[in-house]
Picture 1: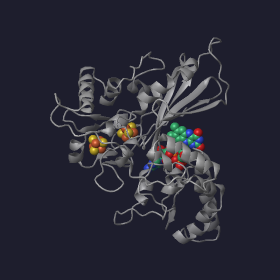
Picture 2: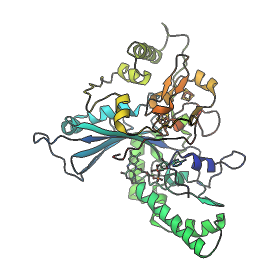
Picture 3: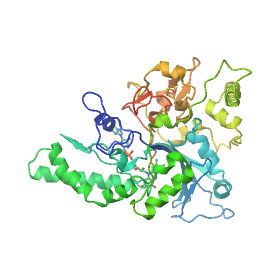
Picture 4: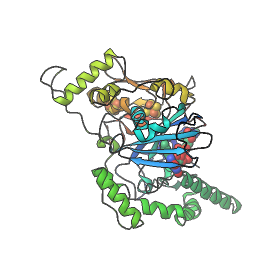
Length: 405
Ligand SMILES: Cc1cc2nc3c(=O)[nH]c(=O)nc-3n(C[C@H](O)[C@H](O)[C@H](O)COP(=O)(O)OP(=O)(O)OC[C@H]3O[C@@H](n4cnc5c(N)ncnc54)[C@H](O)[C@@H]3O)c2cc1C
Ligand code: SF4
Ligand code: SF4
């Protein structure tokens, strides 16, 4: 039973046939869509002057802090609030940085009025495979079957993945028991006749089909995207917008080549990069962070309680369990591509600041900081071949999903 989620190495290995080529079903996309989901768990003060939020309250947002970013706020008992954002792969801006965007998000006046006196209790990040059934891999083979998000079960119309993952797991569990009782082998045919048959006739499949093309419009802008979702939702998937998604690496806009080393005569874009690079070095901060400041985003007023640096959030957020004795699980496949890469989106997006730019300009990886969000897998701006970017994300030790998250 393979249920290793959207970026699981076992599931992705099963996507390859013995010759290393992709083997997927007829729905398999040329390009998958992803999002980085990042959230804070915040404890609100027991303060009668602060507006109370009722447990069970759910707010969903879109369009802030960038047009492409969706957000949410859930209120739990005991004054705990989960608040987070999704930064999608179809956001073409190469300065993707979920952490800083999340800090701007919670400071939106509508949220800040209730959150401002809170304390950060926990933090986490996780990739979401947003292709749903359109990205469904081969579900079963001799001796294995796939369940959950890695099997394309997440419903991208309702944004629901947990119930679907559980249900596909139960369907496979029932199928396994049936086969055991009948003393039949776990062959591809038998798993298809039991597990896949249950799944195809269930509400998971019905929802997945309705949602299959619901997100298509987003590849051509937020307005088309919202229209496409409404169309698919209102017609239960009978009508939807057409789309030809490309691999995530190709959804990132290219930074125009620098005509010569930093200096006069460069384009405005390059000069912004130059300013950002100078600030990043002089202020000892990450380049993408400096780039957002240069582009006019206000600085984050760190308070050591709720607005803290990304490194402090790492320490608060959960358990980074990179055990000694394991090989690196993030590998830069072709360093020549990294040398030529102007976007360096792997650095900007890295949820744990585990990927940084070294003195030689090449990205470097620090295993101890990695939170296994899988973002680097789909945030590389270069692709040596096909759908995969220049980063190999293999099975490793550790991972961060704090219990509170
Ligand atoms: C910020 C955010 C908010 C969300 N909100 C909602 C929501 O409100 N409602 C909803 O329904 N869905 C929501 N989702 C989606 C939902 O979380 C996923 O669809 C769901 O978790 C998928 O479940 P899964 O079991 O298939 O995969 P996962 O939850 O990703 O679980 C896979 C597990 O496999 C483990 N694993 C991977 N590789 C290995 C290995 N080699 N060995 C051992 N273990 C391994 C991983 O550590 C992980 O624990 C949200 C997602 C995010 C990121
Ligand atoms: S890993 Fe990808 S995004 Fe990062 S520097 Fe190399 S080519 Fe660029
Ligand atoms: S290096 Fe680790 S923390 Fe950084 S993006 Fe990759 S998986 Fe996430």
